[in-house]
Image (cartoon, rainbow, N blue to C red; front, side, top):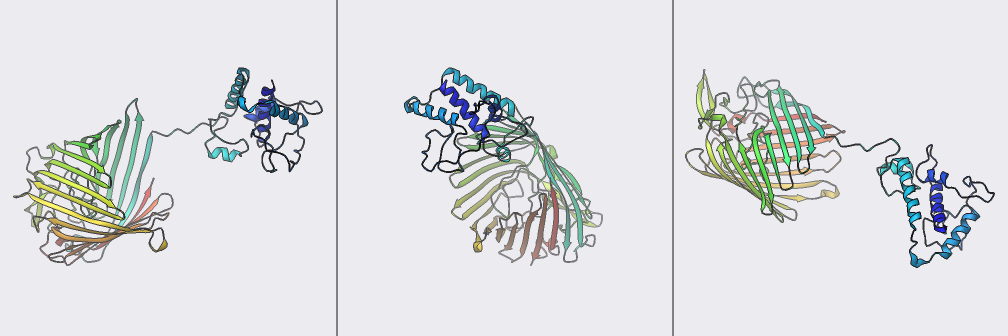
Length: 532
């Protein structure tokens, strides 16, 4: 009985420390049900002011049961003489060796009190001191009364809309082209997720639409993603239209062959069309094995007669030529193995099917010479790797291709990026980039970078606006012609992003296709995006 009284006393003392609330819950509610008689015989809660602690009072070895300390700011002394007498008696009679063991009746009482607190407050088990404020309890996830935890929605909606303005600084080579251009972009992204007993499923949908002021070909719609992704412990499968990236270097991505390039979006080739696929990825101790079946081919997009920048002669994408009699319905296959060895990331890939980069066949359309794209059946083996040593990041991409043109050929891109962290005592990082680009075919219409050196820098301010800037110059080591690229972005507010891009061309020879068509197409592009 003495220990039962001590338990009730502890609950009453703890309840006295709670802040006053309109609705008493938890220990406060218990304190109203279980009260300690006061010195005058009343059963109401004693509101006698707490006496000042004595400077010679010894600290109790049982905190939480009326702890007595030398500081008036810590837990206070018992409120009444009856409480003090009961506490002293219990502390004197309790043996340290018995561990303050509870009888079955006392355990039942504590369980009943705990159930009463949960029922009254609707809380989950969270370690919060009784003296903390309601605001502090809310910060750690306490839900009171009728409130419930907010469940994560299985439907995620995001994406962006934006406007872009392009300004060209020289007169066009073709009179059908203009000096400036406006366009509108809409790119929502939706995903619906649900889980079974052993599998997680995600349905992804990302349509893309651009409305262009000048170029009818650049006004286009595409389904970037519409696929079902099924994820298990050691494998995952994607069925439908999707995007897959392979690559390591900064300036080119020759191993990235699954998706077709959406060339009317940007000259850098990084915008991709959605590719129908069945993709199985197996995660093993030997690495990740990725298998692809690609049942439908996507033709590369090209600017129309009014589009700028574009090649001269222009490419007539409406009249493609296929090596395969199945044309765009030829089924392609690809496989990739990747694994991390410490600081080395390594990938090996193989592709068989319709080449994503077309060759070109001249043709006469009316009184205009145009180029028809020719899509051949190829075999391609690829290697990509990155290796990190301290502040150095080394990058490599290489491919060997057969079936395109009269001879097999080899392409190589490799270099490094060295990063200076927190430059000039700020949070900004500066990375210096250098890469060598090489193609055994020499000067050819498919690849303008047959023996070129790329150099540039990447600046990341690491500020609240996530400000970044990338500048790269690629110079042909034979004729000195140079292409310049600038990309910069900055966020402001919660949803807005400013994107600035620029392209420049210097010393381009008249016969250097396809760059010769761009030699007057220096431009600056400013985009404003709203992300949701």
